Image (cartoon, rainbow, N blue to C red; front, side, top):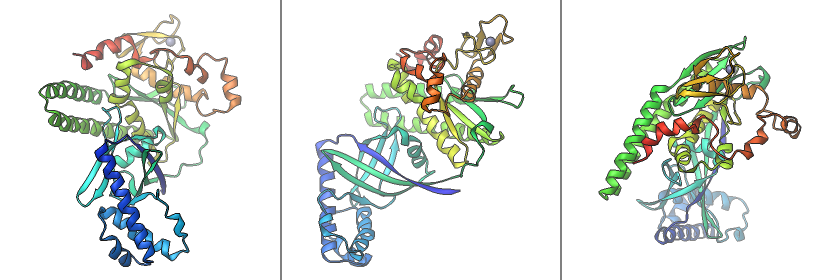
Length: 419
Ligand SMILES: [Zn+2]
């Protein structure tokens, strides 16, 4: 195990004028306290405390000053550097994180204002740091100091976080066993891999969990709508939070089991579908947007990633195109007579019917094996440019082309969202 620390960068949504004023007050009080303690040449925590105690600041900001000022005064620090936009620091636990994946802006941060008073503000996260935020939110990473600052009218919060990760072993990518991870509607997650003789083995479906999540989501959408109609916004919100908390529990349980599955395979490597293809290159409209945000596709990915990292299991992504349409045995495109069934259209193929999610998971694993994902060099992408399934094709996709948007899937699940 080794501890890794990262700075998580959050951009706060434009606060309303009340909250903006509070943020400015905090910044002003912090800077005044910092300047005063610096001018008083406080070289100890207690000396700093005597100065900053007077200011209308949270304990977290005061404690940060107590740690910070003695360092400044101990070194030959240039007072000019105490310029106006010095970030406001908070000690760990001052800032809190909340996650509401059902909302347009998913993350919320609690920023201490002064004693017993704080502000909750929605915040935009860097998509690449999602797994870290998930880890912090799940208490699997430890939050350190945070810094609040404003640049050109926009407020930012930078949070340091630390977590233990297993150092990945030296096993080369070629020696690893790719495990395909398919996230779907019917089965929440499906995993499968091929054994040494290349036969698909040990398919595992989390179908009951898919059912549980569907039920919770349905309850969420119908109940919150009903409560909102009765203008019980606050009840709707707390009820919604409770339901999302339950969905999150299911997600944590399933993603832990996915990583346990991987641990039981020799030299495992988890292969996920690349979300960027879906996010950036396609406009799926309301149905898919809801699915991507609300359903928790990204949330599941992030949890798998950080839990795998804790165990030293590498995670790679592949282009999701057609992973559920192609037959894992012959590569021909098939169809789904029923949601859970894949039927190969190739008469010569031994596969007539196959569990659809397992077929998808094997395709995802195979796509990694075919070398698409782990060689992103220019040379490789040129080589691949002539292949049908090359990574470069992703950009040209214009509509729902994989299982997650199959017509029958939409049909079956639309009832959950509509009405
Ligand atoms: Zn086939």
